[in-house]
Image 1 (cartoon, one colour):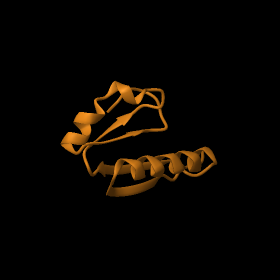
Image 2 (image 1 turned 90 degrees about the horizontal axis):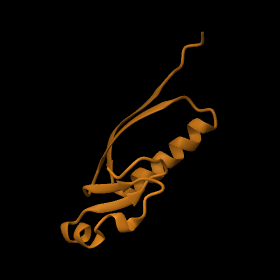
Image 3 (image 1 turned 120 degrees about the horizontal axis):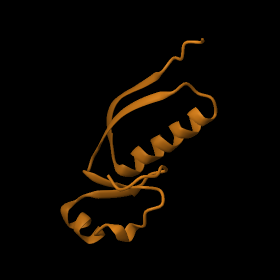
Length: 81
């Protein structure tokens, strides 16, 4: 059996849009045959990540704005985190 080499991306802090853009690019990279990737990241500002099929009206965007929280839709399913 062939040994799989994982790529590890060290901890970085980005805004929600950049984090999701990086995740989407990595998803397409792996789908295209790249080695699997484990990525460590954090958010600045603190943010809510909506799942692909969730609607923006499931969160209170006014309160998010008031508290300085970001929000973004990610390219995968599940629920908000």
